[in-house]
Amino acid sequence: MKNINFQRTVEIRDNVDVFVAGGGPAGVASAVAAARNGAKVFLAEKSQCFGGMGTIAKVPAFMRFSDGVNFLAGGIGGGNIGHVFGVDGTDERSITAGIIDARRRMPEYQRYYNEYLPGYEKAKIIATADILGIRETRRIVCEYNMTLEDYFKQADFEDEIGRYCYPVDIHASAPDEISKYPDIYENGYEKGKSYGIPFRSLLPKKTENIIVAGRCIGAEREMMGSVRVMPACYITGQAAGTAAAMSELSGTGLRELDIHDLQHKLVKEGAFLPNFQA
Image (cartoon, rainbow, N blue to C red; front, side):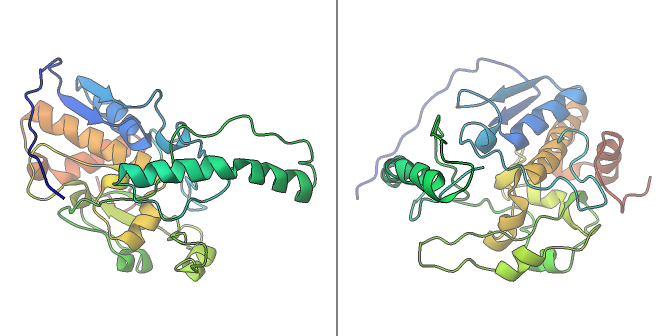
């Protein structure tokens, strides 16, 4: 395949302190947190609404906000069917084929509900999602990439900006494939247990002035199976927005921020940081 080089000069339309790309749970949390901390914010979303997969893909499965004892997504965070296999989220042809396949199978789901599930005899399809809910494609390499070991040992970090507890959840990628780590998902953590999320996992390597949140943070595939869900997106989004505002308004680089000051602000705004000492 031949390649072409492309570049473009883009007009500067707005002069803001913090620009947030994407209005999913992480993006909304980032924008709100940055604005609360005094920054002028621009939140850009390519779709018709905010909310990410919870709205545009009609996957309102927000997963757990609590570890059974503590509310982990404090401060801002407060029935779907079917899988489409073999979709490459970086390839437009693959995505198109996946969408066609998913819509083709919808009448079969309705028939299954009508004939085999008591109480759904008259159920009808009234809407389908505008996009596929793709879990992962590329991953960003950050200053620290979270690992499966961090989940197993309920890791603590000196620079943690939140804690979370959802079990590792990696679905099969083919109809005849067995899901990975079923025991971890079924057993999960005991009540009150969680792992820390380090600030370094929000800082992409070899960049300046960029901070990531949600499914963009640094984590290997297995760990992303836990930290990608919506409550964790609120947690990392709040931290990213707060840090971005602190950096811009103080003239301090993101890597030079006082982590204690950041943690103090997050705790004041409702974040769960049990290891923080004022």
